[in-house]
Amino acid sequence: PPAAARGRRRPARTRAMESHACADTSVDHALDGSNGFDAFAQSPARFYATLRRTFGWRFVRYLGLVYFGLKGIAFALLTSAMLPYFQQMKVTGGGFQLASVVARIPWSMKGFTGVLSDCLPLGRYHKRGYLLMASVIGLVAFSVLASLPLENMDASQVWVVAVLFCCANILIATFDLLCEGKYSEVMRKEHGGSEVLVLVWSCMQGGALLAAIITKVVIDESGPQPLLAVCIPIAMLAFWRTCAGDLPEEPARSWASLRAKVRSEPRLFFLAFAMAVGGLITALGVTFLGRDGRTVLALAISGSLIALSFKALPATLARSNLYMFLASAAYMDVTGPLSYFYTGNTTCIVNGPHFSYSYYLAVSNVVGAVGCILGAMAFQYMQHWTFAGAFCVTAIIQIVASGFDLMIVWRWNGALGFSDEATYLFGDAACQSMAAMMATMPMAMLTARLCPRGAEATVFAILAGFQNFGSTVGSIMGVQLAEAMNVEASAGGPCDFSLLGTLIIVAHGVGPLLVLPLCFVLVPRVRIDDESAFEAGPPPPSFRSPPASPAASVMSSESASSPRNSPNGHLGGLQGEYCLMEEACEF
Image (cartoon, rainbow, N blue to C red; front, side, top):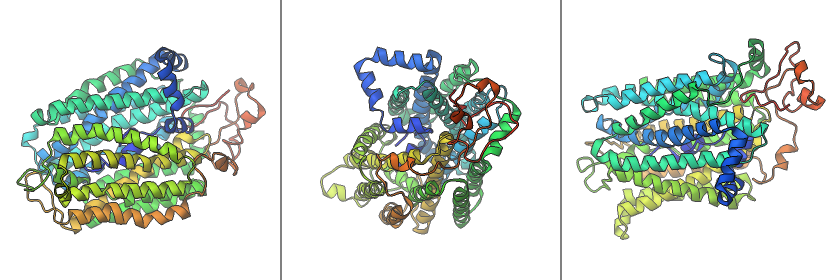
């Protein structure tokens, strides 16, 4: 998940977490995939042969479809279409931001989606039924969004359209999660390297680049709906290839084995379920409650989920998760007002940037992708730092990068001789994306280090969902703050940006600085590259496996008892074996 920036798209930290792999092996390789890149540079043919030998050509082709087509092209087009779609409906800046909260709820539910697919298969296979269902939901959503009479719609229909965008995200988030789980499983079973992550990353970047070109050509002349129409054949192709069985799966096991998975660690399962319910209730609150009601509800749900996390997760992991959640929420999202400031016409703001959609959504996305790459490269030089030090420095860089927005809002860039386009491209598009990636990567690395072995995919998806939910809370609080400061934004006016600069200072400066000292209390004081520090302690609680069946008697006694995966003992009387999420038992 993956993704990079504030004004033109969703918060950069949210997009980055949506794109990270969700298992210990794949996360570590995703953060340092130099071996895979070296193999590709030395011999592309050998690189592809390795992928084909490890994963099979059908699965490699399927991954290309998912990550180039869905996560690359469709996800970028869907994201780019949202702003002009809602602006043509005359939705306010705050309304657009709240609609975006509803639209990205599926990304906060990935943990429960993964657990549910593993414990309750639809049909004969664990993942295929959910992928097909998500394909149908997404295909219907894309078709309706592309065909609605947009010129006859108004702000009263904002929540109907937001739900349709949410359904489109269900398609992409489900394919992203379940494919991550499958290729992570195969990586462990076949002792694969990071080649698959190079393939996934390259497909996503290539797809996003193609989507930016399509957006540049289409958006100003034809509007957002042709972008969504392009996604329809991609969704149809995903449905077809899923039906054809390109995702390799073994048939689901007995219902007794599936029930045992839920009983093995009920607190972790309940936490994933509670996050899904909390996300849905938050979306309903955003839709039906007023300014104070939705904020109180979001904070109450956040407190409840954090309390549950301390019951379900090891203490060190729960404390680190708390800091990462607070950091995501404290960098309050002001996408709505900023997007309308940058793209508003003269009836909204006379002396404004007046960016075209093609520049704001396409050109800046390409530069933002370069910024993300530079941020990932810069993080490699921070490997010997402590986590707390990395969090401090990256947070300060992100705060400083917000100064470019202030320069444009207060029109200082003109006085210094810099155009709006150049200042935005270098500042918000490049520097913000780089800073956001640098802030996200230590979060992903810390999560990967702390994930309990045997439940890596589940726990990583839950923690990524926590950080996405933190960004959701930050978006709701950002709207609350903008309304309290009377910052108004509408595509055709009236607009009031007189306190927009103050809003940026509070949301992107004061909030993060208030949370920053907590990293020294909640985050482990160890170096990022010190893996031994996390292996020295006792294994944290995880999903346990039942005793092996007679067919698995060839396993060693150590593997059969699974001491690291089964700290709570065995589930007697159950024949068969399993591992949660990826069925990744190694015999």
